[in-house]
Length: 402
Image 1: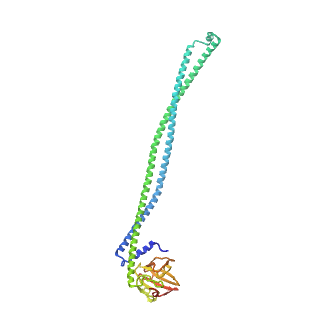
Image 2: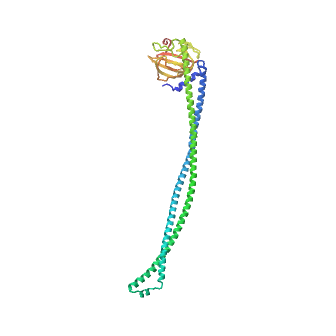
Image 3: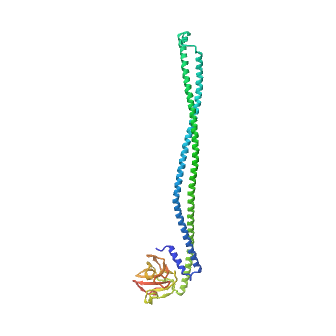
């Protein structure tokens, strides 16, 4: 599994800082621009994080606004219910007033009729005031006529009293109806006043509701806009960094090819693959060969188990033969090391590297990029220490290389 692309690119960028003698002067300036863009992107990320935190805080604070908005809405709904109830009671009072007035008018008509009837009975009683029951019998032609006349006199007296009773009752009822109509009218006036006050209160509560909603929307929109701006700025900086990184990588690749072309002039075998499948692992001259030598750091003679091939910091290192990565990591005095297994108990070792392009278990082919020249471990400067081992014992690599 290879390292993430951005790690590779960062390694290349670090290498570029050490290649100012090979790269154009603009490459160093470009790297400064990338560094500045990274700082700006980091600030944009901080702004974005700050906006996110503030938005969360605002949301927490807005819970109070939301609760107030909910309470205001409940008040509005309650006020609407009160208004609806008052409206219904007003309609009922108005209807009661109309019913009372109508009944009052009908009672007036009944009173007029009863008064006419009472007057007729009064006239009849006056006309017959001197006629008593005895005279009625004496003046009658026969017994039947006398009985009828007496009955008529009795009826006139009885019905006149009934009419007067009805008249008094209806007059009293009419007064009650008029009083009920007046009470209904007063109740209607009170309800209208209550309804008017309720409508004023409703308008005020609705305004509070609107103000709270507007405040909530405004605060939310403001922080969402700031968050979006921070995200947009970060994305722009990331795009710029990626574009600059790609351009710098292209320049690095061009410089690498230039170095390779120059090295090929001094070493015509560079890039050639032998019949046994071996090729040079990097561009550069051999500074120290296989065998006994005075160790440049330890200060005493000891076996040098490989070749030291000179190179610039960050210079590409290629697999010298097809194989499988046994190690891609730190290896004591060797520093960052890659070991490839090639079969038949043969391995190759690449030491003092500045970075890797492979991981344990990867399969590579001859000439494939596996890392970069560095100066890690026991090293006096950037170079590649290269070994070939058979059954774990180092041998001179020169006979295997082109």
